[in-house]
Image (cartoon, rainbow, N blue to C red; front, side, top):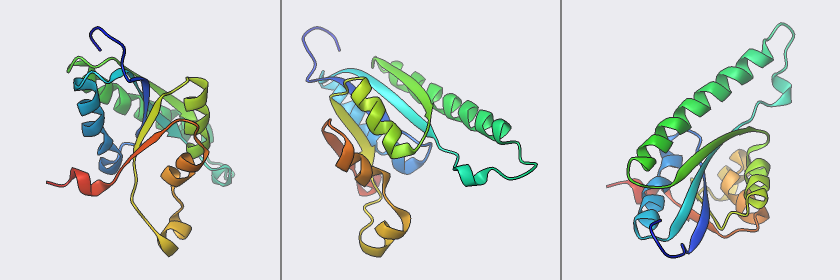
Length: 153
């Protein structure tokens, strides 16, 4: 942000590499272009369930590969945003996705979390869970949820 004080000093943007998650980027760009954002923090959480530990399976190699892929992805998104004049940084963390997002947001004193949601309801939500719903429930910062419909032209 150039001059003045931004409405949101820090916006946390959880991304998992999917087109759905990237739907929030147009909203974040608009906020940044409007001078409402001080800094954008991109976050990707690598979660490898403990039940994936199988005899003979190289858990460390899988974790390292996932970390490397996540960092490469965030570096590309970070580069795209910073080329537009947006102050941005990225972080890759390990843990349970929703819990890690909430804890990181609190630790960084984030002013806003922006994330996409599938918009599942009923049985689908119960079966698939919802990271967005868990973050919405547990986070202390305001949440901007973007539905995938907003990305369709």
